[in-house]
Length: 501
Image 1 (cartoon, rainbow, N blue to C red):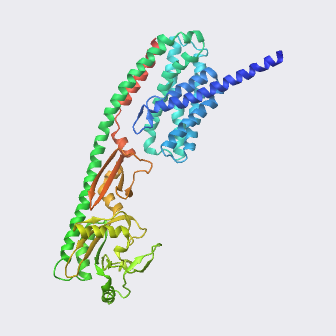
Image 2 (tube, rainbow, N blue to C red):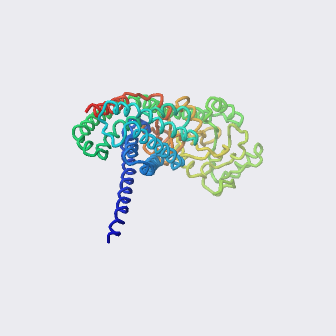
Image 3 (tube, rainbow, N blue to C red):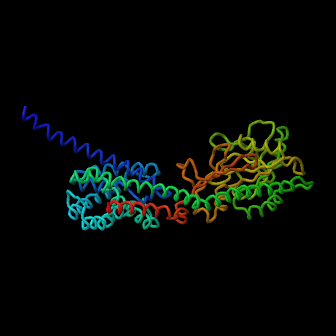
């Protein structure tokens, strides 16, 4: 019985150590999550990182057996952060940071044991001075090792290193200065001394810290609004320019339609001459097409009339695999007859635009309304790689060339790149066809579902939505430091208050 009684003691101690380790890992992850709530936009730089103080205090109090739990807590925290941010191989980045944090807590706890001893009453001017001087120096470790590993692995790039290192070091330093004494109040030795400091030391420190957090949130909200002011202006300008540019294309197409509505017949050469200036001035316009309306009863005669200039001309459609074939019987056809530019586009001649449901819907709309109509997003069959674009159509109800439609094929990537210009370094953009719910252009990551700015406009019978978000370059260029300065001052003041008390 005695032997059984003695056997339970080590087992109980082991359970307590495991429980303490689990508590450390959970406290590390949870406090880190709360610390990031105080981060400066875009959300990765925080002025105070509580886990740094908690981990170093755990090493000071519990020794090296706490280090594996520090690693586990840091790994879990940083994996979740990386996963939410869409970091490729988030586990690799988390492991690098966790290793650096564990090394810092090991060296920091060991160094503090040498400098202030343990049990540590921390009640003399010399011990307090050594603690306040050593903490910033020790917190260099994690920032340096972690960033070196992240740079080597390609997670962080050159322009981000200095700023990331500084905020990392500041966050860890203030985390140690403020939270290590609080952990000592809860678990430190001599126990009676630290427990007695709960009300006269820990409570005032926490109240003072809460005051500065409230100020930080207020200043941060104002600061963020000021930072995003130019972003919103740039975004709205992009919306207006896109709408205006599409409107200009529509006007040009209508003017071209007036030439076909005249009494003089236009040849292929006339058509190309009229289209050349349009193609030179607007790189986004990849093709201009004329497609007459041909009734099924006139199909054979029309095809025969085109063969002197295009020997293989026939009215065609595409099958399910995208291959051209002779078009099936329909009441009416809209075959592409004139095309500019003509180089390498012979395959499009004779293609019946009404054979495709998307193009047919735009044709019906422009014929019925008499105004410009835009298609839903289409693959531009005449472009290598089938880039996503749209077609603008306008009806020509009568003329020497007969009734038909004129079409502009627009490359939306070229259009948006030209409209963005240097702004592309500041804005991530997504252009969406609102009706089809299909993207036409996008530099905004697909993981961003709720963009900071979103606005739309109507054109050609369709609704377009432009969503934007500031890039990392914009944030770095427009970052203000008032809020983070308030938080740094608050944490440092709270730590000094604790030392004074």
